Image 1: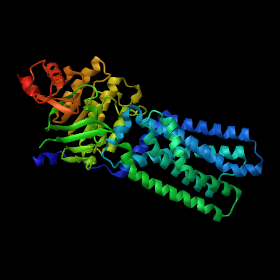
Image 2 (image 1 turned 180 degrees about the horizontal axis):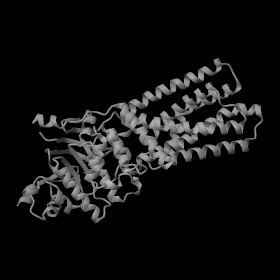
Image 3 (image 1 turned 90 degrees about the horizontal axis):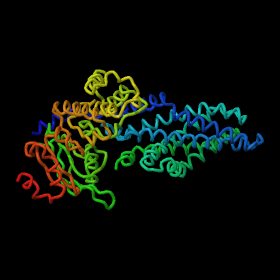
Length: 236
Length: 245
């Protein structure tokens, strides 16, 4: 009898990396067809850039002080749209259950979604940055600034993906995601905006490093936390 | 040893106890029809078997793996078909199968995709986007998804919901083919005619427990409705005797 049961153990767990890249491939392939997420994020970002530019009408010195904040408001709000849409696709037709039924470490699904969301966020940032530079007359193509955008985006997406997995189960998911995400990412966004402003003002690195260190610590802590918690978040 | 073994299963949502010490077994190759009124806990039970929901208490073993500790082992041996197709509308039928095949690390994936598409008679529509499929076609593709990794156990949760007559007949044919391959199948359905046609055993779930169970041989022809009605209106213990009498 025991042999009979042993015979049914025909499959092994799928490797973490293979499963993670399969999720990334699936998200990119679906977005290549629909272009829903990227078009929504891009349109929103461009509207924010244009509205702020014409409504604030700042002089150059003040502009350098507020550009960091404006840039991060644009990225995080556009990111929220993308995160909501990314998880809504999984909820439609019960696809999230389909993902969770696979014999993989569920954190592979989570990190696959994080990488997919990050790619979409980076695409939006790459398009928005030159437009932002033109409208606000600041040079945003600076390696230090790109590193800050990279770290800030990772932290935001790491937290946002976890929370969007939770809120997608609720009826008011579109409202709930920013309400629970922004208080948590508040220190990250403040650090990112401050580092961005200091870099644009040409301040010494001594002033910038604390913000960068905070972002690195935030990213590492929340990625580790999400790795441990995701299985509990998705299970009833 | 049964391929599915459930003992004293309890599932609670807050103060509400949905499953109250449920006992259930299925032998390899059995096709079990799980009947019961709405809200009886059928879907909750299948979600626990599928490792999508954690049992509050009790023993749940599938294919020798215990839940929730060995969930990955259970999932590798399990295919699930529900009234929702669990498919991505913006991917083609083949791309959906490719994705799920990769998630299950299926060997020889391209050949396997061809096989399962043929099984569900969708070879000619494999390149089309799933969002262009009819409900019946999507459900057939969902079967292909559920068996892409050749699982020993299939869980079917109301698979006929929303299907028209032709699509239901097509689904019947595919499910019979799948069952003939020796898989253990547990199906919930309100369609007693189809359940009677497909299943080798019938269990009635009500008030959080299996209150009646009978094999196809134990139930007279066209007697499933009477069995079911007697079961849900009678106390659990004397029911078996009442049905046989």
